[in-house]
Image (cartoon, rainbow, N blue to C red; front, side, top):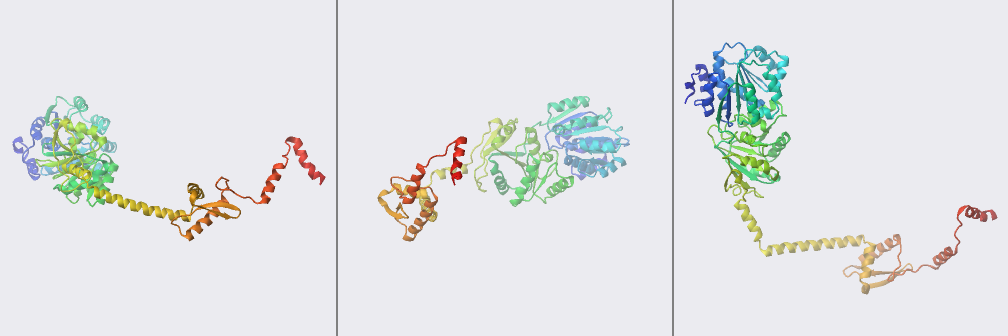
Length: 536
């Protein structure tokens, strides 16, 4: 089937030829006819199947057939990148038809957007928050509006846009054609559609299932193995570009720095970056100037980047829908791709919901402790659904076998060298003990070796000192001097093996103190203490 079979305007067909849209995708084949007939529509299709073209093409055809006397279409998008991409496609396809559009998104020049809205356009592509801000400044006239499109509606609900969306709905005329497109259809979307749509036609292709053109792989590993594994994947696989998804904005910047440190050119993109920074990073990635881009889920929805070879889920996504969107960035337009997910122990429960996707096939293995580029990256077994279990690669099993069969003489060599190190360490400790001996240690050594004591009298004291077998005379003298100094400082203790002879003067003083009368207590004792002074 060709686009010419839809009876589109020649100017529109010329734009389709410019962007090389020759044959419609399945979702476009099913969605374009009822939209041209003026019916509301719910489109459910996996990402990367051409949903943008499915609503942009028929809306532009209807705009060309209208009076073009005001804003005819409003397209709401959850992210700036997706809104910019939709606007780019409108410009490219509608170039020959002269259809005008304005992008109203955060992070861009507010005054430039306001000027475009005041000048008047056929179509507005916006994020809900910025559109509300512009409506406070610019009196946007929606009275002539004929089309409302909610692109990636499930994502907008997840991001908390429902209050803003309801406020925007209140500005629009009730008589309009409403289109809702999403990759998934949770209950919240069904309730929303019933409140804003009238007898919608439902078009659904491959709901909640990853594209068959994407080869899915997963690694069970530890957190510190992630960076080495990324390097190993880049070394083993043939690839041109890679998107690495993380769960947090901070983690995105940290991973970018780590990759640059490892010599891998990378850019990062997340919600806290300014729009200019995001545009530059995305443009550099699309142009091939930078082969790797690290991003949060802002890059997971609807972004059309051609030729993405590998998708790496550095962090496991929060749910199976986010997983489908992420890996949908590769394997687009009948091209093949590889999606790899890193699974740590704490991610096991979340990853199980991904394994439970009906008909989904993921090759799951356990990451090796070390990575050898030419051997380690062999995924051995296909697993289907919840029966998937991690398997050790053969190379790891071989290494474990080699470790268990190590020859004993190698171990003995290690033990011998260890003993030599211990001996040398002990000698150093002995030398340190000679320089700074401990008196208590010396006394214990004297007591434990009484047969080797040599009594020596110094200054009226008998001190026993152990004769060191391997000590020189100078070392012995030095030890004796230090011990003498230490003994003077320490309180003297009398034992059976170490007797202290006190001088006669000290003995007489001790006896005199024993015979001395103790002072009386109380007031009488105080008075008696003054009697000797009064006598004098």
